[in-house]
Length: 465
Image (cartoon, rainbow, N blue to C red; front, side, top):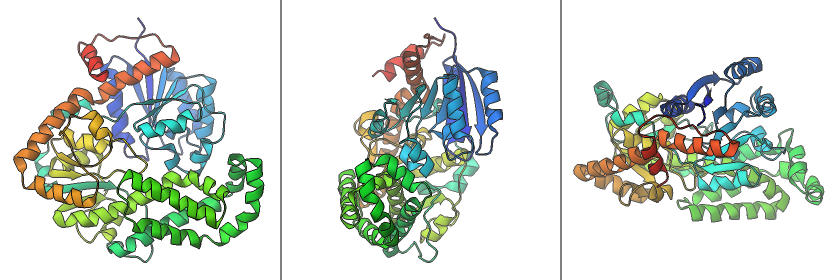
């Protein structure tokens, strides 16, 4: 029998979700008998400070959310990746997003071998596995979960008064802006999307490393054909703006519809410019999806706020929405829980880069006895019993279900009770920690460690079905 693992978990300070996720995961590992150390870092944390802590801790395992610790957009990312590889420290990159949703340097990193050999990747969406498998990287599907301590959650009475609402929507930061358009006008939404996304494409095309990246990704023949078209592309990016306006006007709501429309968009670009350029734009695929998700949030939020929905996010939402965002600001993780607890219904919307999984927000809503109204993904059927959750595909369906369940309190409360029982029986971070430790022990050849905790075998049975 092996000893407890020494695990170092890294918290990327600028990323709000890390400040909730890392401490919760640390507690889950510790509940299994392992020893955890949390290290917070920023873009400016000196390389020597981080490496000194690692050498001091001598960890059996490093855990970082996404690729934050090694992200080339930070000052020390590549050097830290080299350091961890040099000392062959087993490392888990636990993704909560798609890797192509990151910065240009990050997207380029995932197209520049060699890739790290002592890393494994955890993904919450089955459709993200292919990205890593294509690069020969060990990847495992482990769905999101909730901190088990929330089973005993008690709402703060003052917060219940402050945040009381029929429906809440925690939208987070909204990065898409336009200097002139009033985004509370639905007619402006397609132009907002086109403006933001075409700007991203322009920055992409004009990036100093664009041609170097193109030469790396394209075959020699493709690159030679592409080079003469490059000046023409830079001069005619307004064509992309017009194409993106049309793309948004379709109000795409189903995954299949969205995929078909995106393929048509790339065909249009290929016909105008070149197939090679469309191939390069695949690096922006998830940014295009993310931008579409944000403008779709505006569209849907404007539809839902007349039903009494309150929206929380950065201050820009006040400019976006015609109502419902008067007190809009970024919430702390604890405030998010209190908002959900004070809401009869929690409206959720998935970004388009998540094609199959649920976000943690659905789990958090249930954990505090609230009713999530969920943008449908396959995981809703896989992770919960039939009838446990209420999902929607179109915004009209969401509005109709919101009205119905606001008018039927007892039914809504009963559904929450059943789903919540499933949540804490199968989907806590402690369940996920067991899965990850099993993966780590098997993949890295670490000796199995069985903690003296009576619930462990029961948890393992739950995890394994």
